[in-house]
Image (cartoon, rainbow, N blue to C red; front, top):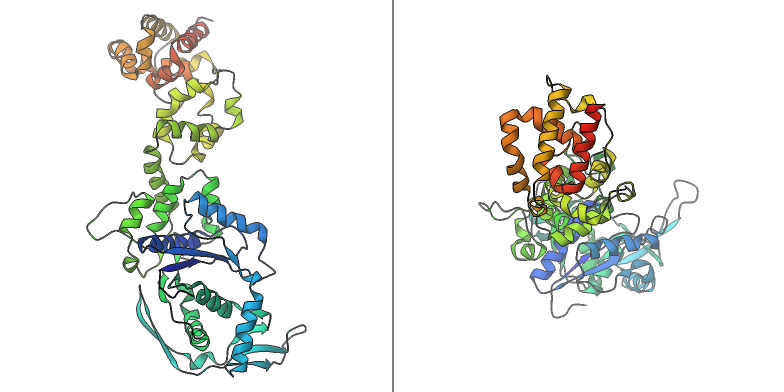
Length: 453
């Protein structure tokens, strides 16, 4: 029990699979609120559904928390290991005539003929929701509701009240789909002598079509986002914005976790559902990606490169390092690197391309003039010092006067194609910079040879 009223929140996932994005958002709000109030968050596995709950799913949850940088919790507890505690509370309620064993008429084979029901005092209960204001419910319609299937099998409503009471939970921050559970839980709290925690019911996380977010909408779990190469700070940032925004008039959207601890206000959470947009998440991830140091970005890129690229004959970390500015500009999430590789947008950086000579010719130009332009560019670039190849601007300043004088398309198209062998690729200046002097000149000479033959 929490006698000194330190703020304690809780995150109680069921270990039945990957963590849904809506649950992650709830967990982040609990974490932020606890930190703001110098409290802490309790994590427990609600595994009373023995058929669906599996211990092998528990690491998905704890690893997800660690990935997001959330470590302000003790060793998680399991409801399945607390059966004796629930039993003692149930026996006490029965002894006090606040609950009873009810004989049931089974409606189908195998159904229980006895359950334990709570003796409903049939009264109104009120609670002040931090987000939604005062809520009043007449519990008469609930009847004498079931709290356990047997002395050793409490149902969710009962177990969660006992757990919250014994953990000293001061604030229950959860999804709005739990509002209907609250009146039952308040009655149980009163029956066992537990004080009522403060409630905050969060808006649902919706798909783009405004229906409840589900697998048909695409990525719906934290594990999906982790596998896709999103940055943890970006996911933390975006999910906090699902249902909450900074003060009116403040346009900031990019936050670090520490900034969110300072800015987040539970009472400012909206009541309406929050629409999950992967497009917006990608944009926020891009902003965080742009802030990564070169060293961290390089490391992440290396992790994301498929072996089909790293096994290419000209692959080297030195050339990859020269490619980083281009990648940082083009990708929004690290899985985009794999997509680029699959679409043939990376291999020409690490392997001399193959193509037909005709592809080098720009529109109405011809082989003779195209060969002449490539020979001239090759001579200009050959005279460029090695040190000048370290600067894209120096490379551009070297060839640009010739291109402007002789037609940019007639000059730059064959130059770009000789370097990439692709109809779509970065501009020739970028290609020259990444490939370096030796490889660039070799590829241009190979193009000239193709035109000669």
